[in-house]
Length: 226
Image 1 (cartoon, rainbow, N blue to C red):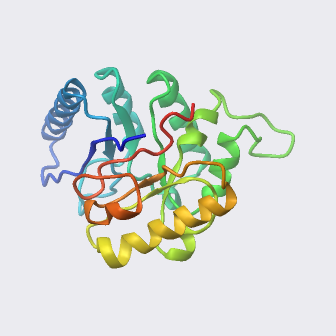
Image 2 (cartoon, rainbow, N blue to C red):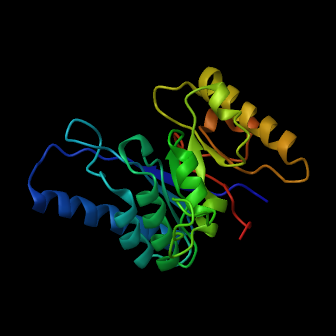
């Protein structure tokens, strides 16, 4: 399967006026809708907390509901949700709702901490023994799940998840490429009959995975696996 083309969205505003923030959101949504009409495959919205970082996207999943409502084919994705700031069950629930509203298009990418509880909930396991399960179910989200890895060891965890790379401070050749190789090798060892198309990375590291584009905007993660 050929690689898809998408883009990652980071924007900064110094204004604390809610009207300015709302206009910024509308501009981004207009851009996403235009990208969908052009045939772009995916768009990724990062999560940034507080007013000293790129933002304001403190909660990307609700924003992706609006993006999904204005698009028909493009894959909306989080790039990434920072689970250490969350009860991991809540983003799993939100992702399952967005997935249902988007017709099964959402890709949920998370920071690779506290991910075990999120995975279990998305797989249909009750968060507490003999307790209720996630509703709506998150099986489709689980198949599309990707993780951001901060080391070769975490990238080689063998969980079968996709791998999200592309931080501006992580060089493509010496930083991202070794982690992408480790992820693919672990995936191929664990699932030798499965085609590993689960890496989104920087264009300079395209020799190790089916992804091209600016910084880390593209992914073929999980496409066709529904």
